Length: 592
Image 1 (cartoon, helix red, strand yellow):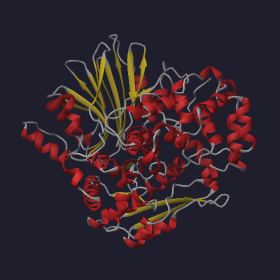
Image 2 (cartoon, rainbow, N blue to C red; image 1 turned 30 degrees about the vertical axis):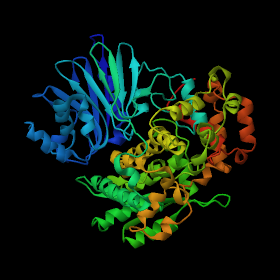
Image 3 (spheres, rainbow, N blue to C red; image 1 turned 135 degrees about the vertical axis):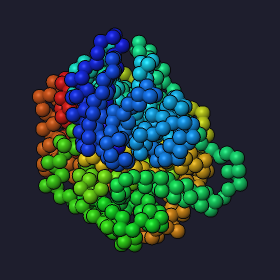
Image 4 (tube, rainbow, N blue to C red; image 1 turned 90 degrees about the vertical axis):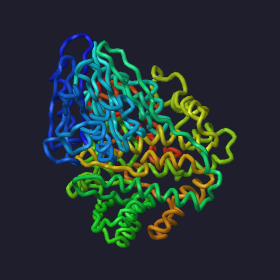
């Protein structure tokens, strides 16, 4: 796991090494174990290294293979790299390192742009061809690893984080109206290629881009998720699907043990992370390091789920770390957490992941996380009602959206109000072929869009802020493909994740499976009062906020007058949402 950046020019001028150095400096937390910069004619790249595989200097990046005339900067992990290495050696390739980076390079030499279809893992990388001058960018199937880019005068820059690009000059920092609508309506999810800033974009998941020396480029989506049965699937019953699911998850968890350092688990106490712990124990992992975090209760709402994580930790005799965060620690950490966000993320548990990752990074460099199971196996409350929906797009929006277009128009500066971009996005996705059932339409949108630009991004940003690599077995693409084939009624059984719950009974205690569904609670950011309300008020009344004029005064005043009354359908604070966006802009120096 690392941080990458680069600049390619199309006018014959040399790239800015100063820009590369500034971006690389901003990426330090993602790779504190090493760094490097490389320039060749019209291209320059930078890399920050977190040593997970091949701890020697042979795997240092930027990596250049003069024999092949190729170079690479890479962020992520290819779990099947050893099998691919053997395959590539059979094709005549020789290796000088023992990690996965060189495998990507040789795979590109062997298979070109199709190399990505051979990879099991999470990745964002850039490969340059010495002789042709072309640059190849790639992102993994489910967008686990980020890749941002910005067009500049006669060139293009890319980086693992948006703030790294903002460390350079020549970037358009104006607000993107489409992205703002998504942020305010689609629960702060801003789908690729948009970001909140008009001048910065992100490569979509499952996408590769070939960039020619003159600036021409072409994108190709190399993986699409298809829902519905295939082959003998119609002959399978509920129990069959449970057995197949557990077998696939075992394989996904085992794959993510590939490392030359110990691997721990973020244990929330929910079904998903508990199942990962159980499967690792089943595979002989003894003394496994597990980590949970909790906060103070507010207005009677609990701030931790330790009772459940403790059950799992005791059952499997893990080396468990229970991290308690009181309000005295939470508030001072907010600005640092917001600085670590590549994009503004409104979910309250972002701060939880940030503070948890700080502690975890003192013990291990790699963890497995249960992120993604709810989107893949239908664990959210909005899925079951969709089974009989006659207008699924409208029903989905009614449950998921933070505000409708009418309220959006009341909240935002009129100059930024035009079309109902978020509703149009949902309707377009729901109408696309490849998913017939309403539940599957929602699952496809959530897995390939919402998941990528909310939970997955949250985990990547907050763990990498502390040089911690998070691996997500529920987003193993073969497991995701399998889940898409399971009949919707099996997935939503038992109130959601039915197949997964029943499969888990042979692995983990029933008390964890049959518990009420929980979330990562941070109630202090939901029911704003005291110093948290002061923090929000200061943010929205700051000179930068007033000069920017992003939100209407009357709307802000209404939220400030009664913060606890303005809660979204997904139980978030509307006031925190607008304050978080404004604070993010201020923290990253985005002027009005």
